[in-house]
Length: 472
Image 1 (cartoon, rainbow, N blue to C red):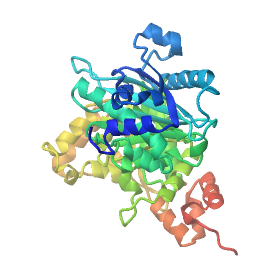
Image 2 (cartoon, rainbow, N blue to C red):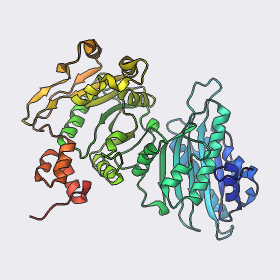
Image 3 (cartoon, helix red, strand yellow):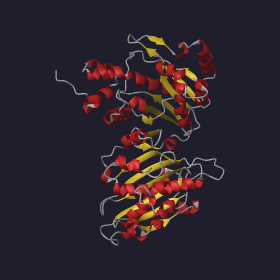
Image 4 (tube, rainbow, N blue to C red):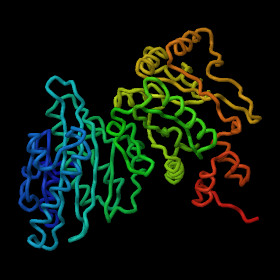
């Protein structure tokens, strides 16, 4: 056995020799790879009360109940497994086991690569665990994408990840970010992508899972993750499955009247599109890592949470991504839904899309990026630029390009891939978030003119963006 703290056998043995953790393993799909490590390490009787695997759907439904969606690899199935198995553990062993025991249940529901390699391996994994005897349990929940191009390797990766999760719960629990980073020990992000991470329970009541979502992207565990207006972290492909998506990228530092008008007017047009009308829409505010970084290339976590608070109060889902180029964002969203994707942008972002400097790393240059961006069910919604004297400068239809790009833009118009946002609110002068932030820092009271009332109240009452009013 390797005497390596990152080795799953070593970790499993350490847990087995620890007299405190005691629990059950319930695994659906990809074998009983996690429990196997604990058996192979030795001394498993000190840790394992039961292992089980209800592979047959009828058995699984009889034990855990049916899923309304008909899907078995989903968060709701995982939570039913944790609920059932942990309640049985307490019902049968509470008062029977030694008083220092800390109960836990590990569960997963996974689909690995099929024989023809026509699917995407992924899974939901969770640990419900006590950190104090007789206390209410905590939950660690993750969703993973399996990146190995071999079913056996994917099963092996699940086994290592599961051991890492149980180990993190008991030995890294004082530092949530360390818990997160330790999950890929012995694996690396070339084998597994973690696009949802959630901690809850009495010992983690102070953890803001929106911040943990940011850390997933910041630390390279995934390229995109998201959370809902109430702050609940979401797994993108599950949250966006069979939904139309309308996404607006911005700094939102803070959300301005212009931003809000972009949201409202684009939604009005998108929802009345013939291919969208009457079908569900998920509206998203996207923050890229680039838009979160300060001038010294650092990410201020408090600043991020200030933006998140305002966007959540505005009722927006928030996507955090490492997709600087729009074609990469669209590729990601297209893997989550086959319905329509609307991209809302101002004139500066339209200029960025046609800037060939951004595509030098692609063999096909701007044509390759356009093939990826517009070959899918995508439409751009362009918000016109407004001047500070309230007069429109120009719309997307009036945008001028170099002669060799004119036909590219015309192709988008002719094929209904681009549309101007109509009737912008000309009461909103063309003052954007960076200018408002400067006013805030300079204690210029005019900043309140350029943000919605609820944003002004949130900034004042919560001292967001380090704002403190000065006494008159």
